[in-house]
Length: 498
Ligand code: MN
Image: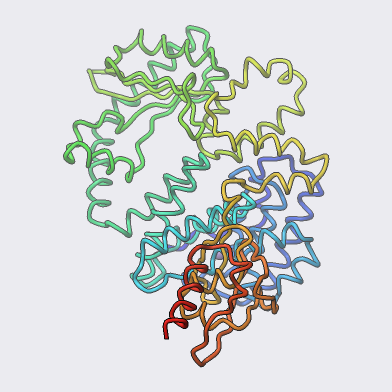
C-alpha cells in the first residue's frame, strides 16, 4: 500500500502551535536540506524517500510538537542514509536539533543478537528511556515507526514480523506510557495484522458485521441524545459513533472466551462538551434518556487513569434495548487522550496567552491528581522554555535512569552499567575473556584510558590481546561492578593456585 504523496505544506498546516514566520522558516530549511540529501533515494515501497521524512514530520506536528522537533524529524535519516553528516546538520541547525537527530540514529542501531528475542526487546525498551534523556527523541521515533508500519507491506515477511513484534512489545507500550492513546491504538492494530493475521481478520470481520447491524441504532441514539442535550442547554461540541480498535477488542474477547456478545463497548458514542460541569450534566441527561447498566459507570475525571487519561464512561440500553457505551469528556481531555504529553504542552501555551483562561484556570483545568509526576514535571519545564533554553534542555532529561547508563558494543548491542562504570566493567559485561584480555578502549571512536568513566549512549570498543593474558590488579581500584571485581580476583586466585 502506497500512501498519498504529501508536501511540506501539509506539515505546516498541521502545526498545533502558532505558525510564526520563525517556525515556518526553520521547518522549510530543514525540509530543503533533507530533500536535497535524500534526492534520488527510494523506499522499498517505491515512494521517494523524502515522503518518509515528510510523514514522520507530519506525525510529529500532529502530536503537537514544535518546530525544532519537526525539523529533527525531517532530518532524522539524513546522517545515517545520505552523504550529509551529523556535523553538517549541527552547523546548519545547531546542537539541539543535531542532538535529537543523533539520538534517533543511535536508537535505530540496536540490533537483534542471536535468538535472544526477549533480551533484545528488553534492551530496546531500556535504551528508549536512556536515550530519552530527551523525550522528544522518543516522539520522533514513534512518528517514524508509525510511517514504517503504514508502509510495512513493501518489506519481506520476516522483516514484517520482526518490526511488528518490536512495535507491539516496545513502541506501543511507550506510546501508552506517554498517554498517546491514538498512536498506541494505531500501532497495535497495524502490528496485530502482521503478527496474527487470522485473528485480525476474524475480529475486523466480526466488527464490520456488528457495526452494520448496529448502525441504525447508533445513528438513532446520536440524534436523540443530541436533540435532548441541546434542549437542556448543553453546548455539544461534537457527538459521534465510534468502534473499538481491533486489537483492543481482540484482547477483550480473549478474556471472554472469544464471545463477542459479552463485549459491551464494541460500539459507542463519544460526546465532547466545553467543560467539566457539562460532562456531569450530560451524564445525568444521558441516564435520564436511556437506562444505564448497573455498575458500568466509570468516572475517570475525578479518578484519572495512571497515564493521565480523563473521561466519563457509561453503558446504556439504547434504542430498542441495544447496549451502547457512551464516553463523555471535554475537548482538552479528548486531545490529551490522543496526543498525550504533547497536548499538555499545547494547552499550557494556549493558557499563557489567554487572560480569561488564567482566571478560570483552577476551575477549568482540573489537572488530574494522579497525573504522572514526570508529566507534571515536563509541563513545568515547558514553562521555562522562553526564559532559558539550556535549563529547559537539562530539565527534559528523564531522571528514572539516573543510576544507570547504557552503552553500545560496536555491533549495536546494549550493555547496562552502573554510573561511573569503566571500559573494564564494560568488557567483563560482554564476556569474561574480553575483560581478561583487555588492553585498551575507544569511546565513540576516540582512545580513552581503562579507568575512563563511560557516558550514556557511547559506543565502546574494547581492544584485546590475542594471547591469553591476565588482568591487572590495578583495575580493582577503579572498577564499579561486582562482576568485574570477582572476575579479576578469580584470575589471580587461579594464578596463585598454579
Ligand atoms: Mn526513518
